[in-house]
Length: 185
Figure (cartoon, rainbow, N blue to C red):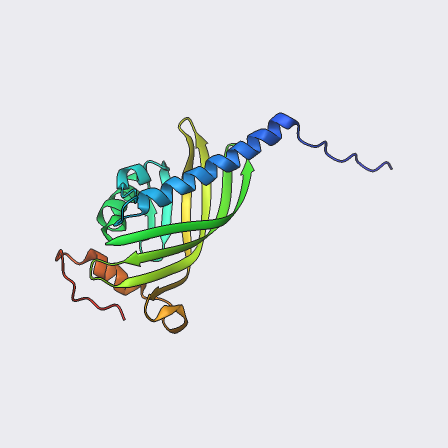
């Protein structure tokens, strides 16, 4: 029996399309981070633009928000919760992207510097597991799942306190604007 011939290498056009798709997905993630940043000169602070990066049936699942289904729910969360931080800086690094036709998936490492409305400075670190869909408008998020390695007070660090998610949720959703008495330690 003759061994099967190896699959031919993709042609130049196919290879170029994969590279372009990778770059467009990196740009999508960069826009997401920009629009979710808030509280400093240069931050995007735009919940509607952030939500428009998702498909209509997307899933957004993080330790602080829980699982949300659909662009409408994601938009509402961005307005009511995500951009209520006094400051947020989102960094996403070291993507591992895999494209298959009109879908893709990636894992990113994420680090966030956050300041709650109560004035508590936090570090948040972990990974993003994401799925993407090519649409008529370009690549969009079909799913974001955030896995948390830590969410810890800046002054105490993740070595001492690894998860204050419930306290952060309570602080962000507190109905009294300008209340600075909360202490997340």
